[in-house]
Image (cartoon, rainbow, N blue to C red; front, side, top):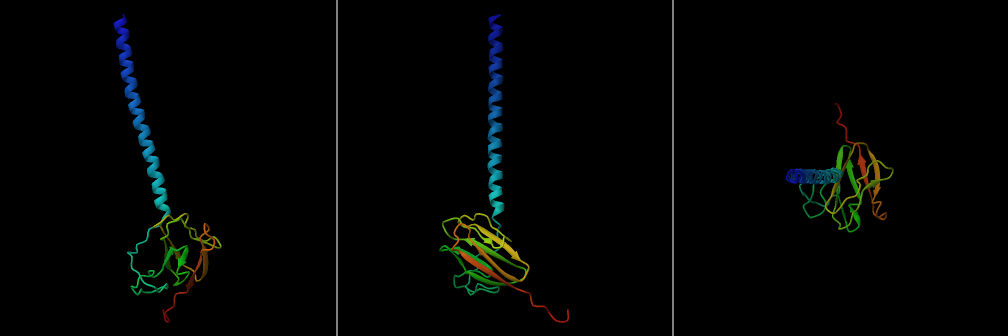
Length: 160
């Protein structure tokens, strides 16, 4: 009878080990899934741009001069400032902000029309301006950092 009890305990112990491995695997999967969801949330908050690094110094809606400044419709966040601090565009233009500083910044309009959330180094945020007007914004983490987007109406074509 003792032999049977020993076998029963061995079988129970083996089943418990299998269950431990099973639950350990499930916990690992849940932790991995949680980390993936968190990462996707962070990536989703950083709107990616289709710009390929074209540079210039105009700071207006138009071409670039290739001299190492900002691309058209792009605002660089660097040196604790927005560059350019005033950007002129036309309705329907998407503006892209890129954080080049080694500290976190954000882009928040006043009044609250758009907000980037936290932008780590290298992160980008974009917003499309569909209505003419002047849009002031700042970094709420560093309130001395301010800028504005001046949106002009699209010129209408007579006769159409």
